[in-house]
Length: 217
Image (tube, rainbow, N blue to C red; front, side, top):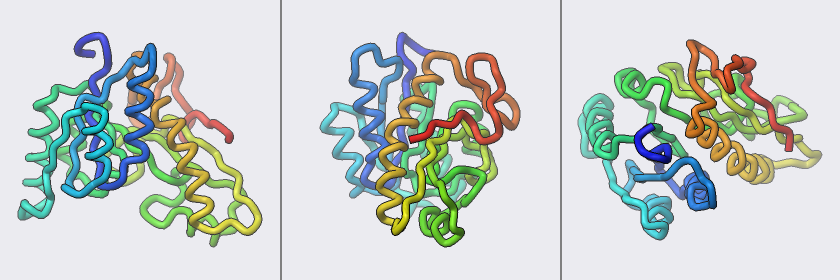
């Protein structure tokens, strides 16, 4: 780590509720990571306002200004690396990243996905869980690899599915748990307790299960 706290850059595309959870944790007494910058691919992302209100540096790298994903990702890497972060966190960043980008931040790039991976990679996870008749759903924090939503799982929050649930109601309950497990995983990384080992995550010197550490709400 550079300095006394783990310097973290957060990438967003939207409202930034997970970003807010990270900002709040970073501002708490004894926090072991700082949010040193927030970068968005959309200039109207509300998360930029959240960051500015917290005194955090913000910038926009608009993907529409580039001819292809490769050139966008290279510009994004340049902007991230200006801050010399120890960790890069995707918090509702709605862009598929190139292998070049993922390799550049290998082992220090995290994402959160609204399902109990490996179930329901991709979009519309709450609807898919309900249509499948599942009795539980949740969210997963994982290391990012070149496989979309396929990197080593770190921690999962398990949320029971209730009778009469809609995708919207289920999403609300899952999001509450996202705001718990994302700062937790970032804190583990900042403490030096968490690292990526091949295709699995290691916490406190022990290889985690393929589904990561489970937390039940």
